[in-house]
Length: 341
Image (cartoon, rainbow, N blue to C red; front, side):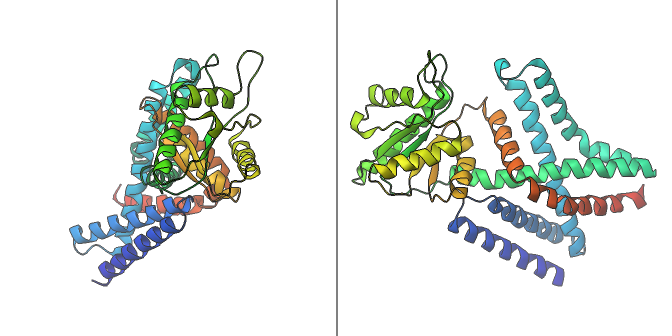
């Protein structure tokens, strides 16, 4: 009974912490981590309620194992699907093959770990634990990422602002591709929302990378906004020097500030890119919120994986620091299996 009450208290605590963090500033990866802890406590509580006299510690351990398994399988499916549907021009046969094999390895990892541990040999157990740690750690990290980015994407935080920054992307033969068009259309929709509130924002398409043949991204974006979307030319100001997302934000902020505007501003990008752009804005000291245009379903797995890897790399110290926690989880789960094997 005390175990159930303790886990119930953990459920309330973690959900309260998550809602508080999300309300304060949803532009943090830790919101996904706390959400994972809240879900973990819920699974443990459900285990206790369904399985009677099971100890609370064992229920928490099983819940952690279930999340590690779910994360590894989710990541594996995403990798395999991404390798299958990625456009051939974006990845050669070797890249598609290696990605697909990596995804398959994640999918079979849980059963491979059980088989290796089931041998009962030190070598088999050691390899099984090592493989389990890698798969579970990557899977849990993916769940943390999804727990942070998905709520940010689907639960926008509308705000009033006099400036909208539109992040550029690559042009195809000087033309606006569908991905970039969705960003521009999302910015136009946001402008229309602000107009109903009596605010006529300045739109800043941001992006350089032009050459003798192709215009700068921002130049092509501005032409689309004026000629196709019907935005008055006087309400569009281009930023054509940026080469990275960080430069997009810094240079566009400076442009808006010089034009007499005052942040925070609204940033328009693709939905899959919204959370990482929000992380960058927060890291630069900007209180901007990011809105995202829709992404083609066929491109979503690849885009999600790329954003996950980039975010993971930027947080590599924290990811590495939590490896011992995952290792302890896997070792304890293996200890439950070895005696019965």
